[in-house]
Amino acid sequence: MSVQYVQPPATQSENAMSGSPLPSSDEDAPAQSEAPMGAAQQVQTTLSLPHIIRLVIVNVLVLVELCIAMYMANKTPEEFTPVFFKTFFSLLVPTLILGVISKRFIPKAQQ
Image (cartoon, rainbow, N blue to C red; front, top):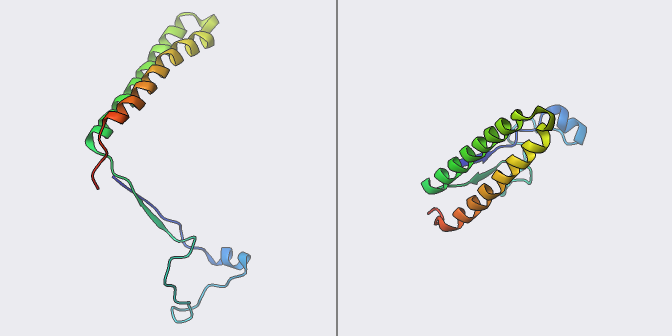
């Protein structure tokens, strides 16, 4: 999986506000050996199959816990908020801890 972040080019109005005019042709543009600070950067991240599976499992568990907490809280509408928080967070914390622990046992992806 690769992610690419691209910054859009500056418009004439943005350059007019900053005081730097756009070059009229490529001949007028200064030659740059390195990318300027605001240039597009490419960021690549790779996730192995075990990492993706762990991510999907943890996300599904959080959604199931949310449904369970809503169901339990709906049984007593007058105490909805305390029951929801008590149920949801008592289920969420162990899931997140197990997710972090399981991350340590999965080998890093090869690049």
